[in-house]
Image (tube, rainbow, N blue to C red; front, top):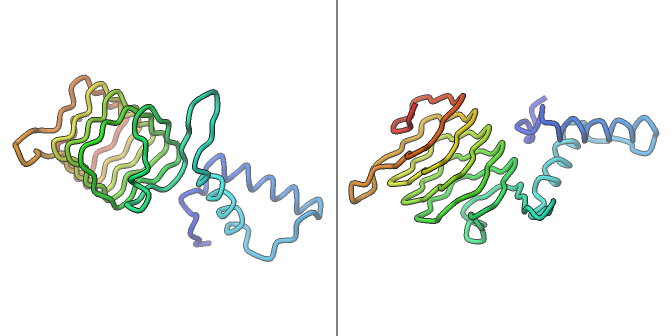
Length: 178
């Protein structure tokens, strides 16, 4: 069944929420009047959109980042899980965070510095990185589709010094080390 939460289907969160709803229905504590995927998806999205969760002193962000909420982002020393970064242009910024099971879509990043980042299970789709540096960064099981890593307006290349890419797939993308 097509629904707006298809991207969340198959995650551990989805399975956990669906089991909890099933328990409530079996116990007759809950009567469903909406198709189950819409209920599960809605609850998963609400949980993921919780702006800040603190666990053992680490700030975890799970949300969708677009141009509207981009200014409030703290890029340094963060942990992002199940985040979607979509449809924005940004210049500069130093980033030294971990990104787990997140996606970048239609991002234009100029002169960024991703220092010591970990990108795990990420997808990069239709992104452009101009003069952006990725020193000591790890790309693990990432998918890059239609991405370009190009020179900035002064001719500076993207830098991948001491960058590791493991288990990544690169489709119709240029400038990424393979």
